[in-house]
Image (cartoon, rainbow over all chains, first blue to last red; front, side, top):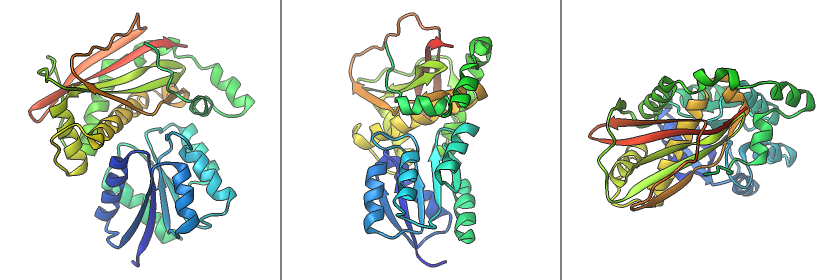
Length: 127
Length: 186
């Protein structure tokens, strides 16, 4: 698989590192990883960088993950790029909100590297 | 002790968005599910799940409080919605640094910002896993972003909670406490 440019958005730097490690464990060894600590920072990254995959937390201060997702779509910042939400919120209502906001995938924290691999690879192969 | 950290947007989302959805949600009550919500096994299984999946270690409930260390680390994640209260994680700095080390693969000699970040995330996942055990709670209760406190010789006091669970856990050769405080239930 060619180089995968990924944006990871989470207010926790530890979680960003764990997500990155999980992606590498999934076999995506040629990752270029951009990090953002909020939805606002994530939008700034997307204005200056092209990415192939976005993984975002939902529960963040300032701009949360769902608003980030809506802004991506509204501003047409990453057309066709799959977005996976990674969050502690796991109810059907939260999943529905994420899908309605434009997410293609949903991973519940805590997660295993295998779960990340499964979701991400299926999305990348589908693009 | 008030927990007002849950943002209005989270609560609105936790309760559904449209008017019909809101009416449906408001009809939901946890009053009749207090036994289920306060079941201590939910907390134990949440702690075991989070530690196994995110740290790769077995964690078991213990009967005694961890040995007190000079410095303590406490993380708080608030609940808002049908249930108001908080999930509180507390440990000595040694346990906190070990948890952060297992999460990041790094070694720590002090409770720096990375350790605090890791403990906040652990508390966030514990809160999410615990409320996820009860479907009505999962759908109708929002979480605040974590707050982390470090220091020496401090106590947390909650006035007249609806119910409270306080459990001690052990992993490797160290331990910590997790407290679920409910100060209001609808």
